[in-house]
Image 1 (cartoon, rainbow, N blue to C red):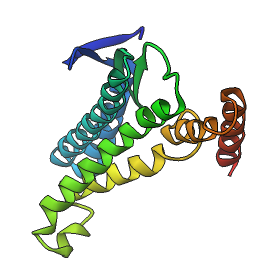
Image 2: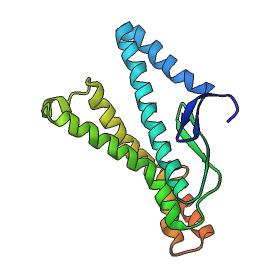
Image 3: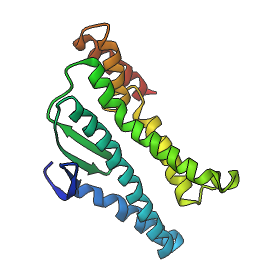
Length: 188
């Protein structure tokens, strides 16, 4: 993607960050340093980077699942609003599109579950402490699942809906129905 810098490669897939992504940690760090000081600002920026680490893993879930169906991934790019795995092509079969779409949120479910299992030993009090870095990361991954599974394009849930519909109606009709559902969701 134009205006992006290469961070590295994961499983042969280039991972990039778009210049506009830098606005997010600067904004978070800048506002936090003014309200809570430098240590809180550093922690806030580290948290943003940790969340986007989870986003990279989410996109890798899509990319590696697509690879199982012979679909390559050009790259993964981080943007302020999330990440994008640019596949060489869309899956040709509805069940493949379903698998690729679900794979990203499934990664976030696994991350949240691992964090939950790691935290539960510390007691319920810690699990409900919104100031705890790992607790916030767990809840953020749960929120990423919920948000991404909204049945609206371009969210993963929109692709899941289209893939399920395409199992019983034409792909074009499934796309139209999924787009209408997404529009209705966005209007509310």
